[in-house]
Image: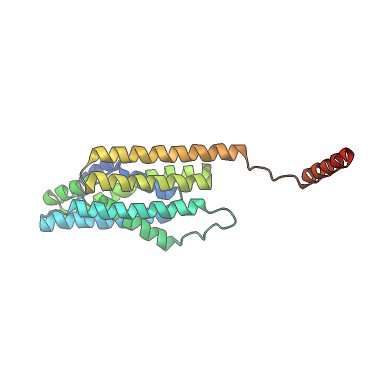
Length: 244
């Protein structure tokens, strides 16, 4: 069992480095408290690798990858819209921050959908077929939590240093990218279209950000001065009297 724990921990930790799960974790950490995000990651990791162990050790079956990827894409599109709408609210009409239990549910659901059928889960399935299932489940869960904790640290640091509205827009863009990639690459099996869709989304987001930055630097257009308008009318009236 100890061998299964160590092997699974090392394999999953290395597989998670630079994976989309870390980016998803960082995206949530940009907006919410680290302990809420980490709790959601731990629960999701336990669920995902519990399914992996069950599939690999007890069933020897495979999961339908494309339907799961399509459901994950829809979920990420929903998270992108939700985050973008939060970012559009001004200080005077800022929405009430979501309750921790709602954020926890969002983290768990997005992680489970994103990881089902992913390479990390497939590695766990393979390990569970040849090693102690309990050791594989424990090691894989701990490995994923440790790897994603690194992303939480990065997200927390950025959360303290970046403006609130920029964080909303950045998180919304990342969720949109995750959704597009899941839809085109995994659900439709078109990696080239996935790259093009992500590139277009990034280009549009960069253009919108540039336009908004220029408008913010230019400042609002000052309203017309009523006194100047009054003086102009008096001058015109005086000129007419003189001419008459």
